Figure 1 (tube, one colour):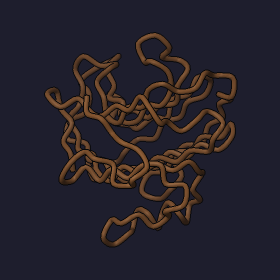
Figure 2 (figure 1 turned 45 degrees about the vertical axis):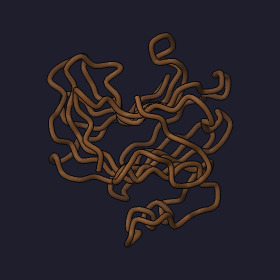
Figure 3 (figure 1 turned 180 degrees about the vertical axis):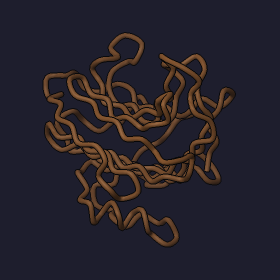
Figure 4 (figure 1 turned 180 degrees about the horizontal axis):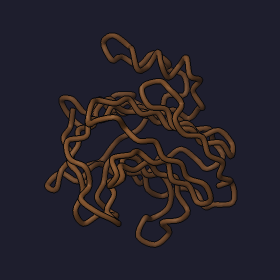
Length: 195
């Protein structure tokens, strides 16, 4: 897994992003090493939308909060789930129409509704970044996968438990970035770039 800290600030993609009207699933493993120090500092685990500096509200993003919780943030509705400890977690974000859900270790923990159909096409996607924080956490991320589809709970669990971490659902696969030996997208469909 790739450690994200003050000297390694995460990954960003600015081309070939899943569209606003498309269903969307993104999932990854994360292990929190250090909780963000204090408000308003958070660590953005997954960010999808416009340039975060100018249009922060017009996005969907998942964050680690200073209280130790994980949060799904939307332009009109957000939800939060307190993580029991700093263990290893499988996180899955699923967007289908106006519904957005966050699963932690194969259990739905957050469900919110946000209509983003009128928003412009996304221009940025971050996987772990300190764009919004001055004093942020350290954590490890691995096995990031993304689909141009809304995966079902059984599909999410199958991906989470794939024995050799090979992708189970190859249809609609948008990205497969294990983050073990390198930061390359192994799906053959898209490319990740380092920040």
